[in-house]
Image (cartoon, rainbow, N blue to C red; front, side, top):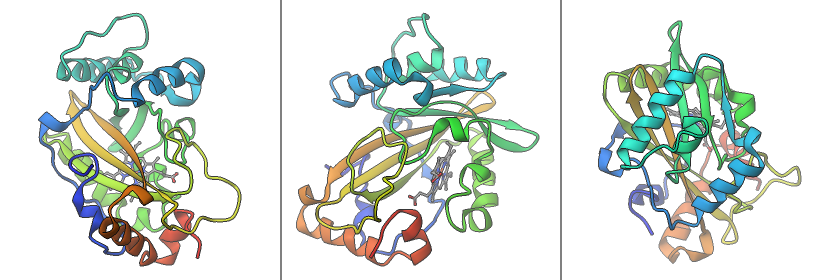
Length: 249
Ligand code: HEM
């Protein structure tokens, strides 16, 4: 259950904090091309029936899309069929969502993406924005992490692949979850779902691909120590961040 996709460190019981938390990526572990994973048919369905919500590209991103797609296909030793947008075809080879970042006038912009499993955000609203602006809904991000994250992404561009983990507790296990429910906020408990994102930043030519592999587990299915630790972390999270995450009391 734990391992690359759900790193043990998230069960430390420490308060959830905003951190960059990037570390070197072992490229062997970058992408998950398991064709039998139940997420794969969901990706195909979403790209078929809700394409405009899960795929987006800005003008001028064509060559970066093609390069990123080729890097993904090469990595999993597959061919791109060449019938659709290369980024879409690449996103159907793996369980990981693909966001293309390109540097324009010193800022890293999200120029294209296939995001089948958004955690309460919409690709169409973020496309074309720089990474700091993308994070504006995240309290204190711009002031505390904005510049350091930009610098870290630029360092990735010097051929240094990195990964980090992000987790939350939600009342809804849906993988495709572009918005939060409008009802009362959710109090994390044993009936919640742990949603973990393994995020990688990998340089491809002058672009960077930000990949997101999502795993959702019922808290009730965790062993008692891990369930208690993750709920303790949520309970100790500063109010402003807890509110952003939709956690009530
Ligand atoms: C080192 C790089 C990055 C760091 C440190 C970082 C950090 C974070 C953090 C702390 C959150 C809040 C999540 C939570 O606590 O639940 C977040 C949310 C988010 N991140 Fe990142 N992130 C990084 C890169 C990126 C990139 C490259 C993208 C481009 C697609 C991205 C897209 C988002 C989005 C869309 C959200 C949700 C924002 C919203 O609520 O509207 N992140 N990120």
